Image 1: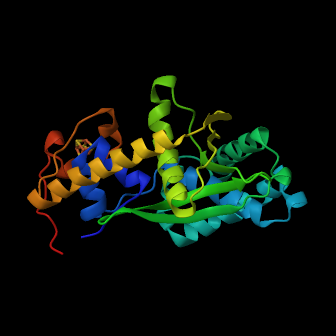
Image 2: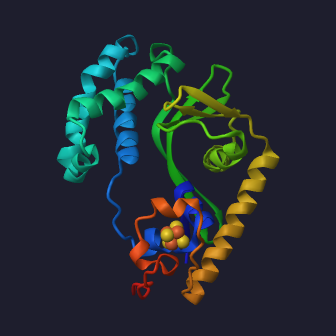
Length: 260
Ligand code: SF4
């Protein structure tokens, strides 16, 4: 069996093996939250902004497109409209637009020409493990150095959690390195919730360590698959988990493993 891991699924298993099972094997639906809807909308606006000619990428152009982008999301999945709670659409869009404005405070998109956006990446790192995902943006400098960029609509983590936040970026750097043979020079997380940037310059040792960690994680997942046992692991993140009715730690009952 060839397994596939994305940064999100790897993070799920690290957080709670049972959560990984619910998301990856049972594939229980999860309704959008205000945070996930905001993230999707802001990413969509930035993506469409970069579709425009460089000189047209202004804050006004972004403001002009946000309502249409939101409508496109709701047309595709009506559940998005539920995240507004008691906000009007205008209030919701104003809040989301603040994150887009925060982006403009960090860089002027008229001066940037990304090499790739929303780039699908995938590489095998062993006989039975594929790493894959989507990279928000890849910039390549005139000297050929590669910068991997991801937009976050939340706030930057406290210093103690920076390494955890950078794991996703090291994952992408590893995949790009294995795909292209070029070690990305810079990893950049742009936090639009508070207008801050977290950067890291990886070396080969970092990425080899990331690969070892992911292979060990895949070995642990395979053991769970063999036994059918995915243990719950409680943490502060349980309060955001959608699957309490299936979790013994929350008084629920684990359903039988789905048959293939
Ligand atoms: S509630 Fe917590 S322990 Fe239970 S499945 Fe969700 S994340 Fe895991």
